[in-house]
Image (cartoon, rainbow, N blue to C red):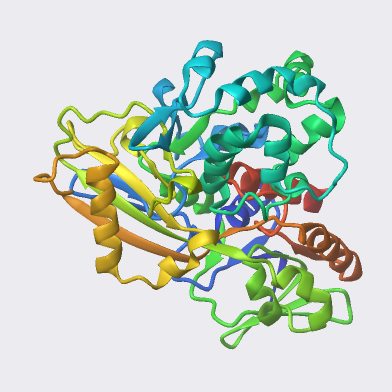
Length: 449
């Protein structure tokens, strides 16, 4: 039997960033991963001049910890921020993409919103505050901004971030910053203006809100995080049980380890098997978390001709009844993602509203992608993609619905009850890569102190 100070279960971004921060402070840490590779859903492929991701394509520098992480990785991995043109976001309406307004003039002239709602937005700062703490994102958006803003801005945004239904995501859990603008300032506009005027420390300014990846792909980041960390791959059937002396026993495949602290970063659905000592009824508020399934399809074109889309990507409102949730343009955002003169696209399909898409065959998916390639990206019918790669994610994005409060409370109860056990990962504290890096740094700091 071997001993470690801290054992982390799961070698995804949360687990690796936690381990990296602990290792830098001299702590003895072991990471266990059931798969034969690190990175979780993050994986980068290099093929015939294309560099593409099978999982997350980008993150946002939403916390100082993101910038600090890359500063600490300097020499082994470099952050790449998206080109300025990627600030442009497209929304599908009718038969083409339209730019989401970025200023007063475009807000007035855009065909995305009705004239009534364009005027309605002027009254947003004086609109009455809501009184439902569990108000869905969609209901809040319609109440404060109007139906067309909901249909052609908020709905596609939620599809892009959560692949979810805005009427089933609770604002204070799914979009807490937006919720707090109304709760604390009475208005999105007033709140945003007040936040912009708040003094910022030098560290605060590290959270630039820029879109990021890593030069050469996100796998470079996870490889750099893992470089000096002890990791065991193919650790199947991991079980964690408390010991009478305050230690934790972690077993897998005939191996036994003892540790003072155990951090789980796995999906909520894996916890019942991982933590068999916790009664089912105590774990149920966590383990029943619903994850939206996603199909991501990477499409490469060697000669894009004149079809250039200087934008982050295009999102599709559910009202438009298309077969894709959105299309990202990675080669417009970052360097080296496609051969010179070519283009790389990432299609997203399925989500909470179309869970059945996961059952479609590869051929069905290919037909849907090629149809969107011609009808949405406007490639001529005689041009076909040079590369199509399909990736299926059954448990892609956790949905922060009305049950999230109960889940967060259950996590706190269990961590207080079982000293030395930390339940982490995207089941709490947000779903983005920035959230994962922030959570990893926070947990490491707590364990160090």
